[in-house]
Amino acid sequence: MADKIFVGRRKNAVARVYLRSGSGKISINKREIENYFPLKYHRDDVMLPFSVTENQGKFDVYANVAGGGVSGQSEAVRLGIARALLEMNEDHRAALKTEGLLTRDPRMVERKKYGRPKARKRFQFSKR
Image (cartoon, rainbow, N blue to C red):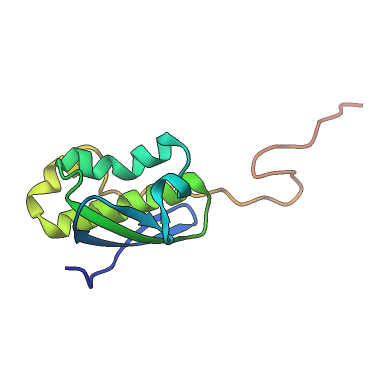
């Protein structure tokens, strides 16, 4: 199963995740998870599929992430891990699905419109 790549996407972030049976070591872009995601919130986000399926410490994760910001990258890695766990054992589908971990979040940044400073914000209106 080590040669299979699982892709997770969120906003503009794309994560390629490799899952191997091991001791629970997680490296993202050849860095430890504590160094790559200094905030505990993002680390917990990445670990959520393991805690839901009760597989903590059983798999090593190697992920390459590009694009987007920190939150988008952590959620992209989370989706890739969830898809990989599902491939390993189809019995995890119910647990992952109830937590919403198998759904790709379709929300994207709205484009800026002409004549406005941002997508929806307007310049100050002057009556006179």
